[in-house]
Length: 224
Image (cartoon, rainbow, N blue to C red):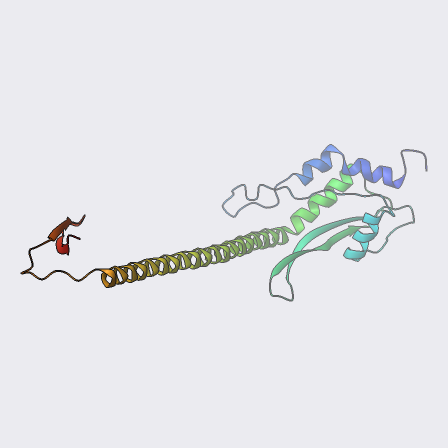
């Protein structure tokens, strides 16, 4: 075909046209009460060069088969389907909703009409997808909340363990201090000379002490 009129060129012009852009940006669904519904558009456009690693991986993952002639591009509409994995957690996987024969590729008006028909025909699917996305978001929020709770519990347990260790260390230090004082007092008492008798007044002196807590004490010693 002439330059600029190949099937790929026709498909690119259609996808990038204003009329197709208008369809893709339409809100997916409206609420029953006539509200605006989702703030997202109906479609997200993505493309890649035929034969590229991205194209091969995409067609293989989506299990898309080539339609039309050898020159025809591949045009599919994919939606995120929610499934439950082996661990029981929800996840999203891409699935094909519809595939255009592209023989020849649709012009901008036909492309817009095709996408708009899909949008209306699968309104319930849009509602299901939005519900699943919301549920997945709730699941992720609960998961993150659970992780934060686990981290909080772990940090709290570490803090409590550290505080308990510090408390035990203080108690041990206080116990050792008291034992040292008692041992010192015992040693001092054992080394004190015998107190003179009450009737002995010659060469005797009395020492009186007042302690910080208000107690007083006195003892008689030989003056030598």
